[in-house]
Image (cartoon, rainbow over all chains, first blue to last red; front, side):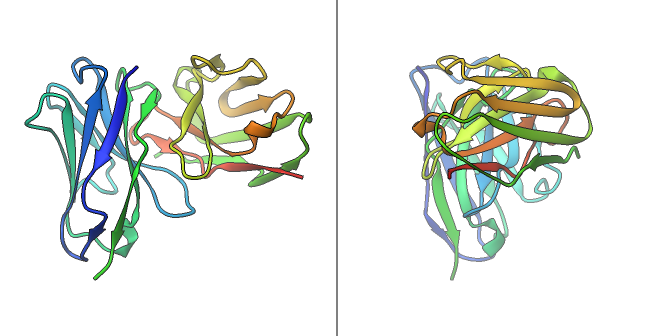
Length: 118
Length: 108
């Protein structure tokens, strides 16, 4: 059973870059798509973007100018960078897996809360 | 962008009752690309239904999904105590992928 685990700073200052890593265990990142999704406290879910293990990406247009998703230097990791953050970027950030660009998220990480504050 | 509108916002029911949750899309969504998730406090969402009507692995048969085009429904035939949670619909056929705002099923 694949497991996903998000990691990274829980506090980021306004205007700085939020950086998170998702580590995949119990399976390979090969042949799957990997997304980042966020959920502001008490609110709904917003898809941020995905990466294919080969490196191709697709981002939500609402965040595209600030987002970079990349495959990590370690074989089973991928990362999220979100630049120029504001308080509106405070959220629980999840990583999730999907078999194709057009399928549901069948495995999720537990999520990590990132607060943007000075 | 496809907007998904869920109703009602909150459903107050008793264990053993039937729950019917609605998800309406701003434009047609192929059934293949409509999913439902359950989320409990402090937990990640869990996939319940994919392809509008197929149950994910390990999901009890009291959960069922239906619908097509712009109107989709999640039905819980008899609520168990562990079913009280928030439910989200999601479309994955058009980019950006979007979620509904959620329906909270609470104990009456």
